[in-house]
Length: 495
Image (cartoon, rainbow, N blue to C red):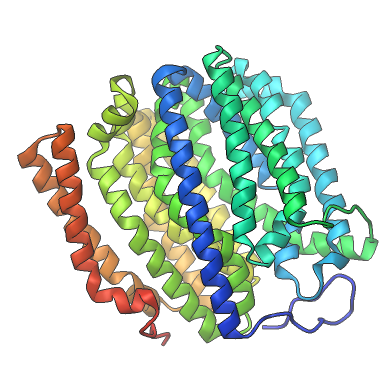
């Protein structure tokens, strides 16, 4: 594969790719910091969610928050037109084209927010929640701050500076949590989420600027702008489709089943995202940069992707099995009895979460290898198939039917499509299967042990702890035979 051309030269500059050993150390160190960061932040968010769900907010208010969050995520997927990834992907000195990236990102983000501000009442009404208009207008201010922060955040990702990124995220979390809790207990309802999100994003923007000094400089070069848009627009389209995949269900549930059902569904979906956020999010902060450095070596890329997939699956399976198998007692224990309707959808959403982890890693790999057309086709196929299936699922089975529809489309249609696209990029099915075989087998054993133990011991808190511990021990014992592949001491066959 050819080197990526920089926008300010007719030929590719010498690559700044480090030697393999140096790259490996950088990736491992960055992954370690990223995992610590993600675990700490998610535990904090988890505790905050418990406080809000138990003592401050009800299902209807969570439903309004879910609608606002969905609209925000859709806007964030395209707010800087995909050009921010050039900071990570392109060879050469990114400071040459960073000012143009910043100008494009800030301008497009500001325009998106202006459109949203004007159309917020219509959007909220269309989604079945007219009272969400004010929350939308406040919460989507994050679009503007995020568009500006893409440049310094891109420099941190390019340099694998996840230690500094952890400090930025800590500032975001502390500010947003303090504001959200204070306003929620003061009776601000869903607006507390919006104000907290904006305050946290402002803190993150300041933190990014301090962690990557000198990167917030505006500038404009028409030739760079054309090259950046040519690079970024397909990625923005793919990102928009990816966000549609995980947010169209919110729109379907909100418009078909009402705010209360949406509140239960949002809680269940957020719970199913715990493994995705803890394990996958930590990996994705370094995976794109790592795959980009390996993109010119198909064999190294196949090795790296297969091993990364195996490690992610090994770390995620036990969390998914535990939350799915103990859905009702966990929801009751953590959030209280009024949230129990959310537990019915959780096992299916945990299966979806496991599938999403593999698909998101494949997404990063396809972006790094410039398989943009394949990526757009897969994501487009996912969205087109998902909408009618979710509508039928909502009509027939409520939030459980929506969850089942998600799993059906993802497992039967999207996973084969991603495997085909990865095969075209030189990553075969055999190495992926070898890397994931032991974790998946261990997950099946763990699920059987979990169900049997729960049947005999009941669902008390003490029994819940005993069942979970026994299932985890069985998982560890079953996954041990594949530890050499997961730890990298044994090569994954690429043939």
